Amino acid sequence: MKAIAKVLFAFLMVACTVALFAQPATEYVVQSVTGKVEVETTPGKWDAITVGMKLAPSAVVNTGLNSSLVLKAADRTLKIKAMQKGTIDKLVASLGTPKNGVKVGAKAKTTNANSDDVQGRTNISTASTRASDATKDIEWTEE
Image 1 (cartoon, rainbow, N blue to C red):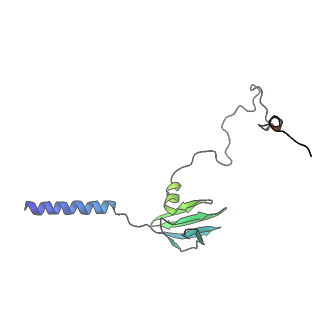
Image 2: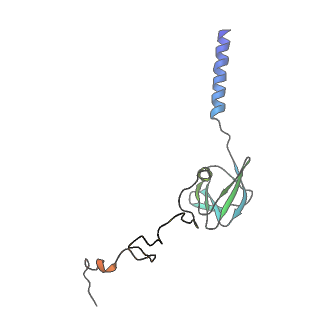
């Protein structure tokens, strides 16, 4: 009886381990394409992506300027924006991470740039280098 219990326990452990680490292969179906969107079929060869095309998670895609790609995987719809290149898995993973930085059209909450108490500042931009300083190191010949 104990031998049967040990064999049954070992079988259950193996089955649970296989079930835990086995992941179903996700396949992405193209829902819509805007602009120039390509997939790398062989190294160095790019083909246009069309609606209805099925893509593997390891497929390398490239979206051009003003382009987008909408993919459907199981119950999720994913949108890859313009100027992105990489495997679908990496691009999808980057969709979930927020990017920090200044966004286009962002405005400063508070500033003292226009206040009168800041001395030595103006609202006029100037160049940070001067060409006249560089001429001392170079010999010029006029022809």
